[in-house]
Image (cartoon, rainbow over the protein chains, first blue to last red):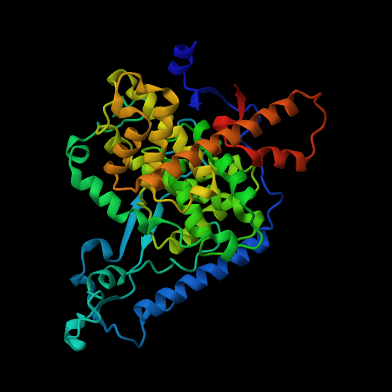
Length: 167
Length: 296
């Protein structure tokens, strides 16, 4: 008997068999009653604004307006050509007519329909190396230029989407 | 041109990498960094007002059930619980948004760990459509921000193979032992008492509980009680006393879950009538899935 239970999936504690069985009720369920969607949206906006604020302060960069602000990091404007290609303005076309309407599809379905994914880099900035500006105390050592470099280019609309257009 | 897709519906999986598993530096690094991913505080005392410990258990139980039904990778659930605890330790959250948070955490953990992650739509359906996919995506951003995008947290599951290969275990039992350890780890993730424990301790405690439970100590003296604890403690540089306490706590949690499960079973056997919401919630709150309906 001990053998059979040992071979099963059941756990054993203190020499007792624990036969593990699946619960029979539906997994799909609402746990805590109705969700107040308006309140949820407000909470979301508040928390999102807070995190943008924190980021603005941390990098002294105004992420809403896409502009550097005053602070210990100095931002330097770059030409678009000086950043890697994937940061530059580009228009990605998908479809290109290959995904035409299904055979027999109505004329209303345009085979020419193209979707554009627009990645807009308004301006590009680079933060100057802190070594140049800061006394060599090493206090700002962690602010190497690498991460701000990564932050330098943003999608123009990343903070403003709201409607269903994004997904 | 016709394209033929020969991809099968099975999930492709990388083989265990000996370069990772047989190198002690990996285990040492895991032990060094694991504490960085613990929640900052015991949040029921210092952050949350609306949310009670039993609600965490409710949402955890639901998450575990979703992960099981969707056949998620084993580490998705513990990782999602890590995100949930870390978020709740810094943001006061309303009770009615807790399930959304649970869904977001599964969404993120699944994306990090799986080749075919859970979709937002599917997760919303599991909340009985109480939230919308758009909301899930918005909150994903908030959660990511609050976790500082540190998603690759160390979980107890990360230690399983490292510990396993250092124990003198019979080869034919490895699969069974692994399964039991994983179940104990999931059980711990549903219980808030373990939320502040380092993952390595939960992993070693789960090994202790699994091996004792399976009574594998017949053949090998080193798998006997105290010997085993000493061995496990050495592997993860844990103090023996702490480890012992942890293992005992794991066993206690399982036993109390059993007891609740048995009570529930009796309730289930009572004549079925229209069950009200409160009863349903109470029911869901009390035990993790794996030990829900239990026969002793």
